[in-house]
Length: 117
Image (cartoon, rainbow, N blue to C red; front, top):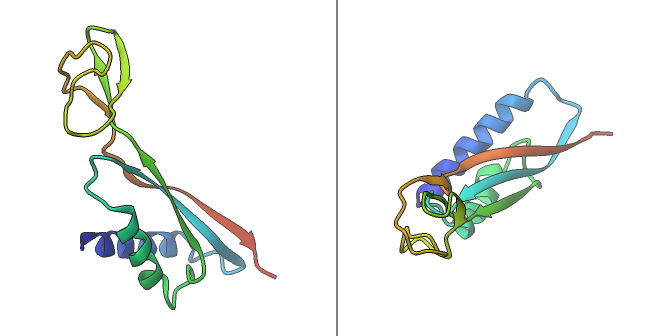
């Protein structure tokens, strides 16, 4: 389960970024995960609970935004969202395309915090 090592990296990165802010409580971490990233959201959520235990992120929530694959279709002249990852053909005109515009993401998008009392 490589999701656990990914989440440990996220927790480490967020903890490092927030180390100089002792009066802040982390409420949530928002991630963007593309359909081609090879990451399973359920495994990320499970790993997050384990990885945050005993850290400044303990009790926070992992919010995952799942992103579909979007290709650019030369024939249609615009980006097209694919219904799945089995075929990289434009869903409108059926033209094959390898010009992937979205779907590989695996990134922390934001951290929601509040001032601790």
